[in-house]
Image (cartoon, rainbow, N blue to C red; front, side, top):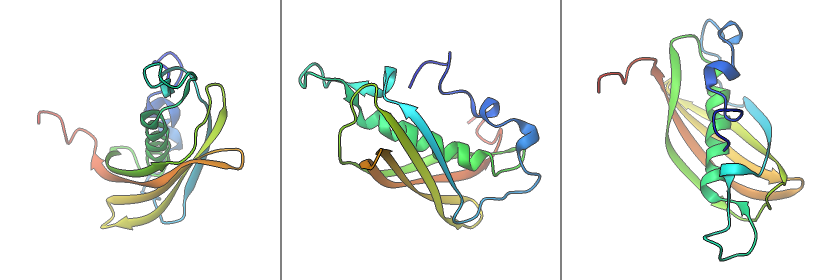
Length: 147
C-alpha cells in the first residue's frame, strides 16, 4: 500500500458524505470490485530469499480489508463506520510486482444489523491469488474515543 500521497485515500475522501445513504443499505449480496497494481508496500521478496518481488500476504489482506471497508462505508449513513475483527484467507498463488489485480468483496451475511460477513478474493486475470472471508462490525463514529 502506498503512503497517503495516493493510495489508500481516507475513506471519507474515497466516499464523499453526499454519496452516503441516509439509512443503512448494507444487505447480503452487495459487492465491490476494485483494481490495484502490485507495487510499493504491497510487495515482498521475503528478505531477499526468493529473488523476485511479489504480492505479500499482509499486502493482499490489506487490499481485501480495504475493499470491504469501502463497500461498508458507502452503504452506511453519516455517523457510522466499521472496524475489521476477523480475517481468514488463503494465499494460493503469486502475483509479481507490477501485476494488475482485482479485489472483490461480497457481503454474504448481516448479523444483528452490525456484524458484516464478507467473502473476499484477489485475482490476476483468470488466476486466483487469494480467497477467504473477512468480518467487520458497524460502530458509531467516535465510540472508541477515550478508550
